[in-house]
Image (cartoon, rainbow, N blue to C red; front, side, top):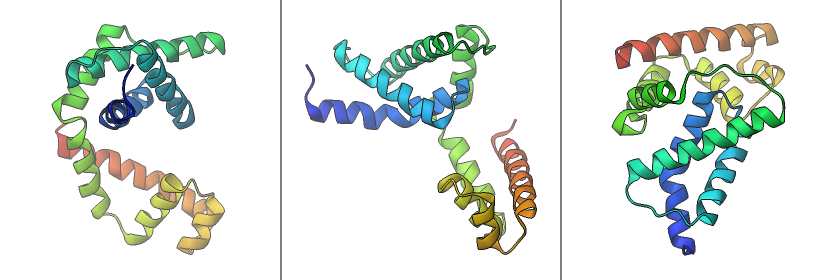
Length: 167
């Protein structure tokens, strides 16, 4: 059995990447959190031998993907995903060896180009899960205007990030 320090290190080293992978598969945020927790518990209970970062990440992704597929079957939901080989190849291409740092840096650069009001709206919506009404009040625009601002900001960010990472 692992020590608490080893378990904490395993979670710290792999949690962010595992959550990104589950979101990549299509999980909602809360489901991704639950499945990541189940994945870590199963890995600890199986007394998985941690060898290196890449092998451990692959094992955790496979375990999490299996939990996600079991959840889909249990809830009778149908999601069309490519073959596992295609998923892994796409994940490796986009996440690369930098654990997605290229995309995070691009996001930071692109956020800096937005107006302060737009950044505030994004922070409220995605950082605090605020309602349109709260965003509307904080930014001084109508709720429908807040909805439009968020949609346009997401479109701008997506285009900006794609340009920066060379897609």
